[in-house]
Length: 192
View (spheres, rainbow, N blue to C red):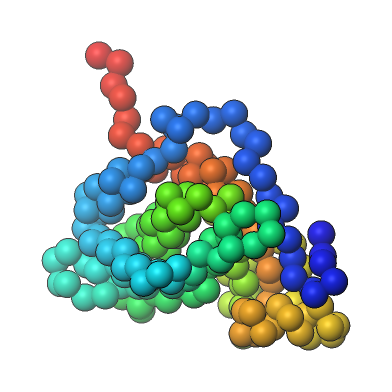
């Protein structure tokens, strides 16, 4: 739903019946990353945050994610500003999501711990091929398309000022994301 300023309201609400025990903790995410040879660090300055992922063997940075916790009319929003991965991640033996999912999981868990209901991002449209890959990646992670920012309207101007470019605006419910990803981060309970 659009407001007169052109900003999109955080309309995603927590409606699932999943218990808090089903949601991975920050500690579980960090422990799982270490088992995958990743060292994740979350740094915070006020509402701003940065997550870095390093290879435990080489100590080289593999990627980083940055964002901010924004206050909005109906609650806090996790604003995911950027994610950057090094070329080294392309050759690593990882799942389809790889390092990007771990960076995203820490960011989303940080949003959950900061009382955010929803996460927002812009899949930037630098090139058609790269843009379509980003939209597919974020859709598979659990984000939904809410607006195509192409610069053709006044509403787009506000998006371009907030996000710094053209692309596809996407939202997700934070609790739903963590629930979707729980099998990757929650320890398996054996029935022995």
